[in-house]
Amino acid sequence: MDDAQLTLDLDGWEGPLDLLLSLARGQKVDLRKISILALVEQYLAYVDSARALKLELAADYLVMAAWLAYLKSALLLPRDPLAEPDPEELALRLQLRLERLSAMRETGARLMARDRTGRDVFLRGAPEGLRTVRKAAWQAEIFDLIAAYGRISARTRPVMHVVADREVMTLEAALERVSMLVGERIDWSVIESFLPEAGERLRRSALASSFVAALELARQGKVDLRQASPFAPLYLRARA
Image 1 (cartoon, rainbow, N blue to C red):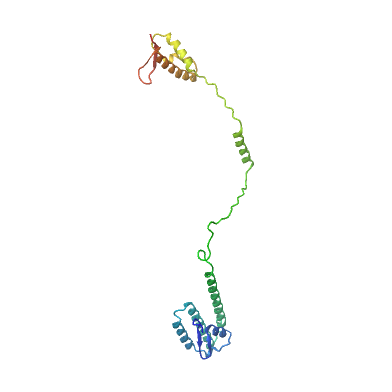
Image 2 (cartoon, one colour):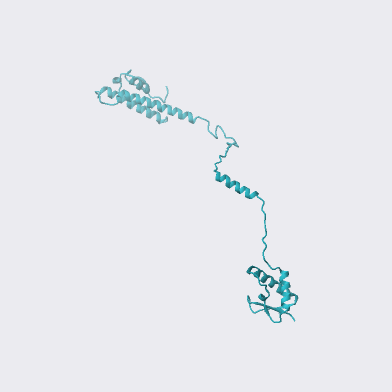
């Protein structure tokens, strides 16, 4: 006999509790002859002897015994026609729930018995992964196309660089003019007096070139330079 199964030995029944409940639901066993007191005593003895077993099974048997007692009370007491649902329907619900519980336990056991990653099966050392295929879907209006064409055409078009003719006085011309005019003057003359009559742009260029020409003539010993303070007017005269 299985130690995990609750087997009853009553006056009107001898066998498993779940089978007794199934037969009682089908009215194949006379529950009036079943002693509820003896049922409770045998269940308590089963619980005392099954401490090392799973408590879930003892709980299921407790629910079965409770429903069995409820069915017997429904037979002994006057039936209320307004009671809803009736004991037979409740017994059927109990059986369906027990079957569902058994199915869930069986499914859980099968899941736990499957192969586990890292214990029974192992992953590949270098997984290949999935290749991603990308396809571009371009969306452009006529303005975008014309603007893109204009940018490409501007980059590929040959560039012609034209140097504008600027009005400047070269250092050679300033050196020649300052050498010629300084020889005609005896006293000190400000450097601006050696500049030609011209526009503002040429005048600035002539002033810079004349200043460099005066420094060069002073280095050669042909003229003397004089300046009272920084940024003061620069004077020069021919050296005697």
